[in-house]
Length: 60
Image (tube, rainbow, N blue to C red; front, side, top):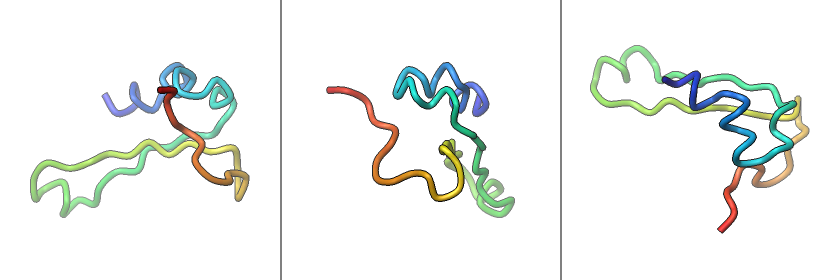
């Protein structure tokens, strides 16, 4: 499920330029996972120090 959310097609629906970005999933720690509901985060970026400001945002 997390990999689907952090997939290239999903990122492209938010920002077409994100198709070339590197991506990774940030998992909660083991103790956080055992404590109850947790949040998984999708990290996406253009490379080391290449992002400036808000990059993933939907249009309104």
